[in-house]
Amino acid sequence: MIIPSVERSVKLSSALHVRGSMIQDRQAAISLRTDVGAPMIPVTTELRAPEPDMPPRVYHSEVALGVDLTPALTASLLVDALGEGAADGTEVVAEVVHHIDVTTSKGPRTVTVKTEEFFPAGVDARALGRGRGALIMAALLNNDFEVAKLRGVRQTATLRYDSPVEILESIRLADADVHAGDLVTLELRLRDYRGAEHTETLALRVPDDAAEQDIQIEVTGGDNARPPRPMPSSLDDLIDTLQDTYPARSLVATIYREAEGLSTRHGLLPELPASVLESLAHTGSTTSAVRFKQMARRVIPRPALIEGEHTLKLSVKPKRKFAAPDPD
Image (cartoon, rainbow, N blue to C red):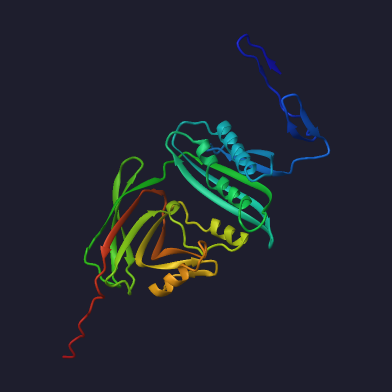
């Protein structure tokens, strides 16, 4: 169809049938081959609107298979679906789930990626399109171990009119006198999206062997923390690492120690003497091991998404000594 205009005419078109592939694009002409087809993978995009009486919209597509093309094209399908069916400018929560079917040298696998975000003035479709799903697809297609064979992608966006968000305003210790082995109480000041504040307490156990050390207590939401993992040595290890996350609706409290451990391709080595740590960390290779802080961690499920991150630094005193009871 041609839309005529004196200033600028516009031609609208859509493909009917795929006849082949363009292999050259020159100024004088283009070169096509009808016996060659670009590799494609199926992508199913489903949009579930906030209104309960509105049926889901399902889009069946195919995208070109390529390191740079596949993540971008798959994300564009999600952006288009959200732009068509989620244009309301109001408070909304978007839950996006990607199921990425991939075949490794060990056989077929499905990588599941789930993200949940709050938007105060309608869904930012482009922000969701740049989310973890596209990043993980790019990591799979551009890994250092083997050629990942993507078989297809299923992506679902579920929208809800809601504002389940709590902002972590501050944290403080109920008692600043901290000894090794103590069960300390943290006071958390939280504020909901409407501005109402409330205080909650959180108990954490200081490690028994942390005496005379400076420790750091960090409290944040599940999206901002990552579990410690060994360095991947295969594509399947990489997939396990990418899938190992904390729920978005969780509070993660971590005690970081002075001592360090090593993340290697053979596993995690959390407790090492300084001399052993130095000898293993510098073995003539820049990728032999990665240092990480020893830590104790607690993950608490929450009814709302947590925003904000706060840190306390303190010195731990020796373990408390309790006097023996008088036999008389």
